[in-house]
Amino acid sequence: MPPNQLKWKRVLYEKQDVPDNYVDETFLDELRKNVNTTTYSFWPTVLESGVVTQQLSSVIIFVDSFVLMQEGEVSPHTLFAVSALLTLIAYVIYKSTASAGTVSISEQDGGNEESCIVDDIKAAITFLALAYGLAPILATLTESISTDTIYAMSTAMLLANLVLYDYGPSAAIVSGTVSFNAAMFASVCLASRLPTLWHTFATVTLSAEMFAMLPIFRKRLKFADAGMLRITCSGDDDVSSWSRGTGRVVAHLSTLRCSLSHTAHVHHVRMSTVASSDSTFQR
Image (cartoon, rainbow, N blue to C red):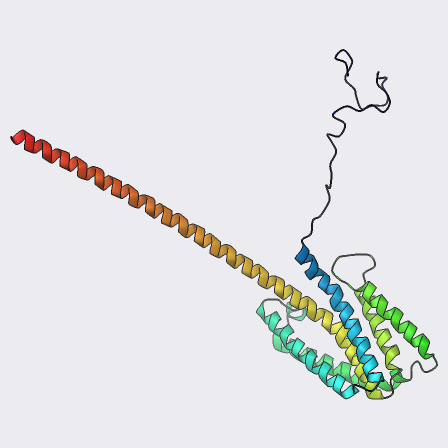
């Protein structure tokens, strides 16, 4: 732009002696790139994605157990015993992590640990009794529906469980209740295609353990690991702070030692000078 020409302004309501597509050197000064961009690290992202793979693995294990029971390779008694044993082990770990630092909901409401365990045992016995008592009804609930329709509905409900499951981030499509109900509906549909009442009972019990209890257990382990990580990090900070403080003390002691040595040396030189002066005066 020539020196005698007025400075260009970024306005449309003034007549300026420049073309319509003219821009000066300050045109991109206010440009901001990636202002709201969030950067993610690789390994934390991999760990967070484990929630998706764990839920997908739960669905696969449930379907695989149904196929094995249908083909007669696994008995319902064995499946129920193994799942009950694993659930008991998970419950013990759950309570041990609760006593290690995290507080359960029932304890926050004012109950102690013993009453919580008694309430959990009562709830488990009630569920098992209802599941076994309703097994004849569940086994004949969908007799009038074709097997292909049952498999199609079960597939759709298990996919809905995966889509609507609460993986952590808040979203409008997330609904833990709908996800759990879809999984239970699929288990009831599949259980109606098994031969005996024990097959139905084992299938419904396994679905409750996989889709109701296991997510709670996984969240407890995640929070417990996060708490241990915070404790470890704070411990490392304390150790590093203590080390820095110790280093400063040692540095101060070294400085004081040097100062004392220098003072003693100067005093010794002065005393020697005074002694030599006295001897010279006596002579």
